[in-house]
Length: 203
Image (tube, rainbow, N blue to C red; front, side):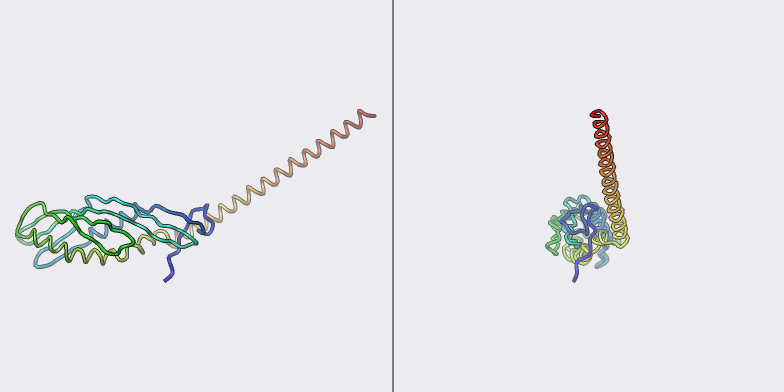
């Protein structure tokens, strides 16, 4: 399967040279949306991810020879909420070492803020069902982040910007050449004039 096309910076002709672009902000936004969209329902309990308490790490897209490779590594803490008809409970869990090299997801420190009738059941659901749904959701993460870099409209604008930059460089070279030629001609005229003046003095 071919790697998605990437658009390097203007200084990087045809995206050929190695270049690293920071995609941390976009990656965090997508990860947060995915986590908060997941809901687990089992045995009358509804379990949801309420907020991202913290997310640390970074994501970069490396571009070389017009191709892109996404690399990311994050630690995430999530606030969850579980409820049924008679009870509710809140807590947190962490996703440790979530990275692009290891497709596995490790949920640790699964805690509840209080002890209720459903707190232990909710923690079991997080270990089993929430973990599974997170893995399923994150399977497309690389492609979704990569789409921002290989978006056709972005690539089109990049090509237009490159053409404009090339035209400006060409124009600058032409203007520089014209300037050099003008200076050369002016200097030549000065030399001719000096020779004429020298000849007149000698006569």
